[in-house]
Image 1 (tube, rainbow, N blue to C red):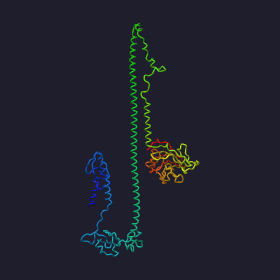
Image 2 (cartoon, one colour):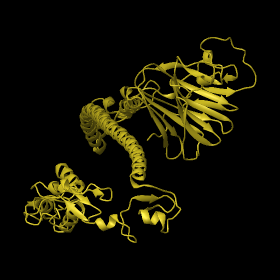
Image 3 (cartoon, rainbow, N blue to C red):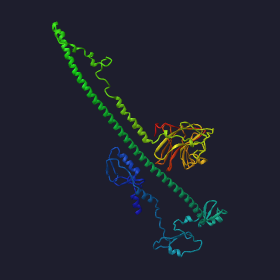
Image 4 (cartoon, rainbow, N blue to C red):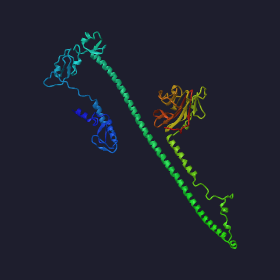
Length: 529
């Protein structure tokens, strides 16, 4: 009865079946996720959402919260075996008494009391209480199944073995065969247990990677937000500065032009006065009066005045110069380039220009170009002195190492031959197979061979599935995050692989070439995902 009540309590009121993936609304009622999603979808058109049970309304589509406790109860309920049917003693007629054993020979179930009085002869085979004792007997001879025919894989009675269709077949006792099967099942169970533990470990590992990915995404989002906020602040400050400069120049120009206009107005009035005076003289008919007027030297043409000419005798313009000093405004705006440079340096601590090869580490069959950015495999021995820093294999390391921050550089390799790029500690072995980058625990590499990429660390080679379309790759190091990533510089840029580790020493760039060459090229302003 209690089991039935519990089952009813676990039902979804929408589909009237036991809830699957139960979710809960804010009002506390639980439903199957699929069922409640369908109900809310139908309510989208009206924009009014309500609980199917209590009819509580929500202004917005309610968020669905997983009910983990109810989910656990349901899982336990599903895995709980139903109560086995109680089998009563065949001989207790007056009052039913539960049986403890069943006799296959008598085809009867026995309680403790009747079991003590039961026959102990061999033909009376006892088993757990059962109501289907007929299944324990041979359907042909009606005798107890005691043997197992290994040839026909069948349970048989003694008559089947002696005179029946299994005569002459190899047979074994049921108990012995059962133990063999149990042992086999135990081995399978152990293997399944081991596989389950490995699967659980993989799940935990993936969950940890998921958690780290979420943390990294959160940090990156925070960093980008801070960077964009800083960009907006700098641009706003620059805008205010430029507008302030324009306003200042406009004010100065207005004052200057206002003064000039005032002077010209005075000059215009003076010219008008002189014009009227000359006009009056010209209109006089009496020659004596015209000649008796004061000296008219001040009535000369204003364009001929000495004060209005330059040193070459040319008349000067009324206002010399541009309206606004655009050069100053442009110079102020040029600081926007500094903002952009700061943005790039906020994204990348170091560019490819800082990666130079160390000839002192180059093997004698690796030629390093004068710019220290190209490594070329050569048959000719470079005859460099042998030191503890020099590789014996076809490799070379960078001059500087990185102990913190984010760094990246791009490498272009040849289409022929094979080459590897990556990073290593300075303590990497310099001779033997263990000195190749990636073939030890002190280095990580990307290997190109036969138009295929592979990544290598601690001698574990992982072949990447996709074919390559570009000869250029990008290496990106985030030292604090413990991540070394490789990208193919195609369009768009394609992520190839990311190594995750805890870096404990300075990391140096490293290149391996064989019948090939590789160049660190300066293109740190190219598009980046």
